[in-house]
Image (tube, rainbow, N blue to C red; front, side, top):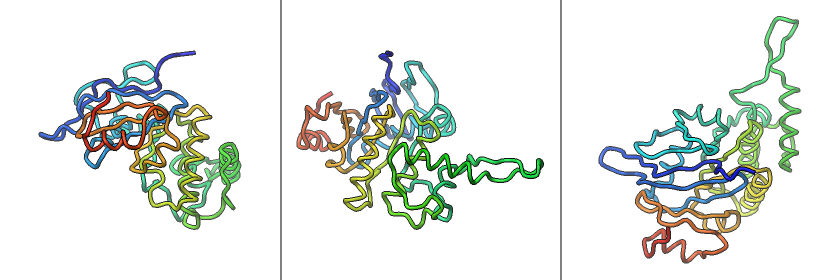
Length: 251
């Protein structure tokens, strides 16, 4: 079995004008591992994940994917490598149904009358039902518009889309924000099941309770620097909060 990390950054740096948003940050994520990235607003969390997802290009340092140095030129580049990002807005088309959203932008077509390309609704429905069943996600009807779903169900659809399209690394930005308690539990249970499927997961969150419920490791950032890399089972909420506000440093 390979000891290579799924994704690793080495001294990665990003500047915007005179501001250093991410300052020589090294960290890694393994397959089947959940890593939470915490920090106050402006700590550099979003900039860090945007370099991994191809939105920003690093000004220094290196990114490794499966042990090999790589350059991620764009979000499409990241997608082709199996790096999927789910932002807070989920990027779902609310007027479309569940299976249409899972295939959004990658619709399956078939020939009609041997000439015309038409959408293959049955294929997309069957495939979507299969991935939802695999992940043990319960949605009343795949033919319902996403608009009719709860927040937790919408998050599940976005996650299912990523896994169907063969995500190896899933980056989740505040996955439980604006969800009720029951829906938060549903999403966190789903995240834990993705770990069992061998998916590497990075979670950006302000919800300490959620982080301690699912994460294996916790990365803490402050003012662009990594100030902590902690095993969840060997730390506490107090220690993490102290790192976030600057009371102590553990690297």
